[in-house]
Amino acid sequence: MSLDLVIAGGTLATAADVFRADVGVRDGRIVAIGEDLGAARERIDATGRYVLPGGIDSHVHLAQPSGEGIVMADGFESGTRSALFGGNTCILPFCLQQKGHSLREALQGYHALAEGNCYTDVSFHLIVSDPTQAVLGQELPALVEDGYTSFKVFMTYEDLRLNDAEILATMDTARRTGALVMVHCENEDAIRYLIGRHEAAGEIAPRAHASTRPIAVEREATHRALSLAEITEVPVVIVHVSNGAAMEEIARARSRGIKVVGETCPQYLMLTASDLDGMDWEGAKFVCSPPPRNAAEQEACWRGIETGVFDLFSSDHCPFRYDDPAGKLNPKGRTNFRHIPNGIPGVETRLPILFSEGVMKGRIDLQRFVALTSTNHARTYGLADKGSIAIGKDADIAIWDPRETRTIRHADLHDGADYSPYEGLAVTGWPTTVIVGGRVMVREGALTGAKGTGRYVARARSHLSAPRPAATVGA
Ligand code: DUC
Ligand code: ZN
Ligand code: ZN
Image (cartoon, rainbow, N blue to C red; front, side):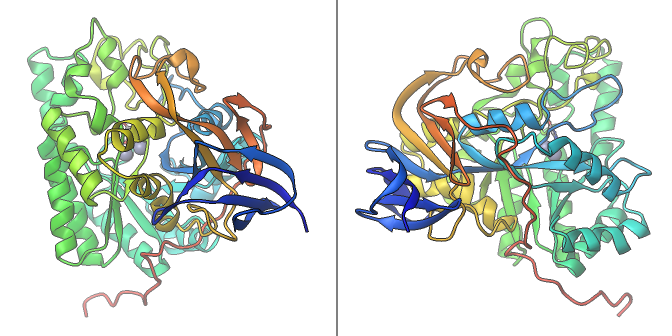
């Protein structure tokens, strides 16, 4: 039987190998890898290009309720379109449980927003903000069975944070069900204390966001999260790690035998706290949590990328418009950093930044790039059909031109924000053709695919998790 698509003449990379071969696609899957694959309905010449597994961005926020009067800049349409143009074929946004409400209810609304609007495949993590007995005892276990196999808990943000008892109980549910817990590690009480001191001293500009969330706040919470994971015997993902001290906690936990996945993001490699100084209130554009640090911590994070402390490189895309009363410059945000919504856009620039700064500058090889941006996300989060170029996998492929040079300009990006934190950054290498499930969605930089092509994907359990018997309390 003939093929639907052949990608010919390119250099393929997986997390393990780089080699020359053609790729044959039929019915949305990779069915052949080799030479002279024969007839196909469509042929793409990838001579001089890299043929890579499509990016999987496992840390994205879309259409997330963000407080009164604040609106996230991307829903599923613009968010997945932006992801697609940045070489991604699947993203994992978060479905937020609001206090007093059920997770099912939140999921219904979230699915309704996604349905028919996606350019890439999507799957959802859950955010547990109200771990009642009913949620932990019935709802979450059923949702894990239904393919929502990971959930995030917060140690910061007044309306989201869980206390240690709640984190332990949530982790215990993960242990019993084989789910994976992701933890946002910052100590809210310490932040509150520092905010009080800053406000008393009249320090209320965006810069104070970084100084009220210093490294010690993240290091302490990271240590605590890892200790709670050790006590409950669950694997854990420490998300958006920004500095060397938190990395040391991860490395120490690993040496104690704890299964921990480390994640970092472009902002911790490319931005520093001095970006929050900005002219006037422009520093608000860089307000995210944890905040960017300094050059030494950037270097530490690069070392973590190179040496394996980090398994995941994600965007933490969390877009708000800057010049907008529903965004960074909301009426309260203009007067005090505490009211600036936390988060920056980056789903489209994640892969080009790591390719340019990492691969092209010789810090990592192509295999490691693929592992950090695709394969490890698929393995960690149970996307069994994704994350590699191999027979039987989904034909989710990004074809990269390693010679294309660009200067990042928000005007050229496809998200719903009104700025990029990386404006003016020169990069080498760009994903010029992007294929989702065998369909060419972007061809030589132009959109060719339709909204609604991207599907929702239910997930298996992480390779790190396995269901275990219930805990025997007091034994
Ligand atoms: N911090 C988060 O915890 N989530 C989204 C963005 C941010 O800055
Ligand atoms: Zn977070
Ligand atoms: Zn986040």
